[in-house]
Length: 138
Image (tube, rainbow, N blue to C red):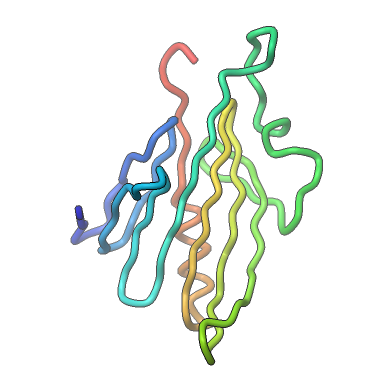
């Protein structure tokens, strides 16, 4: 399992990357990707498409779809939505910043889980640290 000891940009796939604080990360057996620190976790799934049936690229707005639950957001090379969810883990609340991010021909689901409400700004910085760069020629 790789780890980073200082803020580091970690490449994912399909043009996506994220800058992580000191943490551990791994590609999971189900194809997803996770990073974690002492009291937070990031879970990422990426879906790619080759384009429309006539070979044209699918734009970020089309990939994202017409329904946009949550707050509109955007970052380096992507647009999307985010919302904070609260769930129970035993007897404690767990907070999740759920991001749905889109770029041309790709969609990322990025869930940042944390255990204290005051970590929301940290979770938002992690989401803001996501970037998408299309490969040359795309």
